[in-house]
Length: 81
Image 1 (tube, rainbow, N blue to C red):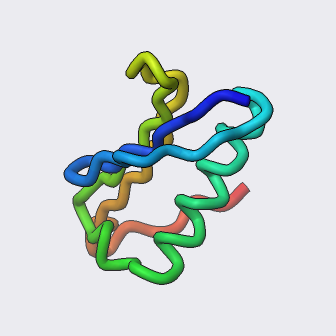
Image 2 (cartoon, helix red, strand yellow):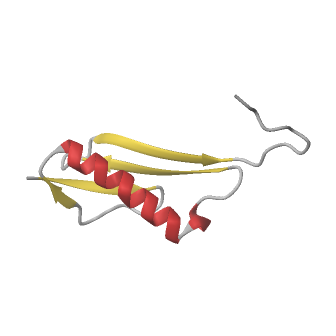
């Protein structure tokens, strides 16, 4: 097992979590981000971005998840397919 760290912009993960594989760490990061943003939507607001980085034990970033939001211009119609 290897230890991975889920670092947010201003909050480094000092403890890390052990996963069997890099793929497991990446999947857990997506689940963590979804849960966190569900419970704390104020982490991202209009015209803002939020980023979660997954780093290995050596500090190398192996995965990054970025969520961006922006207000739509007034009067702009929705795109339809």
